[in-house]
Length: 202
Picture 1: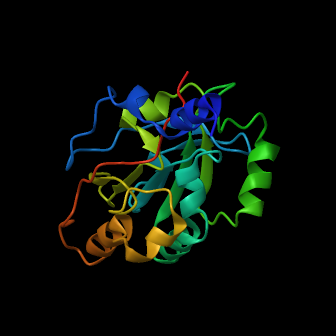
Picture 2: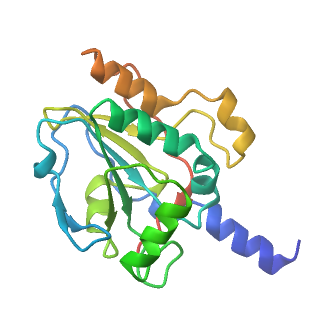
């Protein structure tokens, strides 16, 4: 592998650029937001009041996102939505950065090709939503309960690699958090270290 290729790969996988972002306090109200989706419709957290909400930070060019979009993320989306949750994917890649979609049509083409099964894809090129949540990586996952309280934040699972074959041996922490919420239990694992590519803020 050439030095240039190694450098480019390291840039795609590393997360230091986002590590200075603050995290959110658990068991506190999740930050509100107002942001457009791929159809240009303004979406807010308030419109989903009284429902469980999952937030997923996404960058279609990230190897870790590609790992989980081998079927793992879509399966979790289907399950969560079927159980009544709202699934919001958020792209905070800035203009000119990896993962930024120039048009809503580009985003929708990717969503269709990858069998995306969430509720809405939110486009956050100025990074306001991502920074409000302290989103560091793609993916970075959050679960908000029906009272609007943040009850989980971190990685999708507990095996921080970009290898598809590792999904089988991982514990899906988002699925576990949703199961706890749906059963009326406190979330047993409420925080884990997020892993993936650094969110490509401006």
